[in-house]
Length: 158
Image 1 (spheres, rainbow, N blue to C red):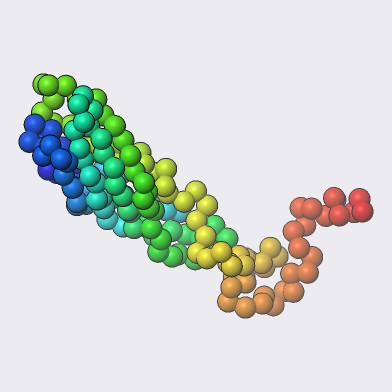
Image 2: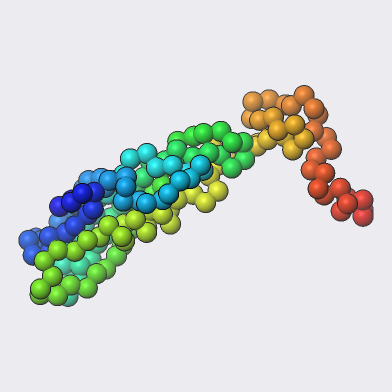
């Protein structure tokens, strides 16, 4: 059952063999704040097998979140997906536990799966250090042979 974008499990009615919960949370659940590098597109899509085992609730499955990212090398915008394919959590339950909210655990797992250094592709050549031209679109006109001038003092030591 989902209530206002949160994933709440009705423990009292959970099938003894476990049940699959599939759906999407509200994008507001992420509470990421303003970011220019990584922006979620929609909510977290989940496919979770939830099973009560004695005094614990075992949750296993997959989480996905579509993203719009800015490449850390070239500054271009690209689409990506954060995936947690082996999500597992265990929550203690009691005889009096009727409902359990799994939203915070899901949120934490997908945040850990977000790219910290998003790159549009592994072969991204980035920007010219001299003129700032995107080297993926071709060679720059400045030549860029000087390289990064911040290292000039160390090169002089050779």
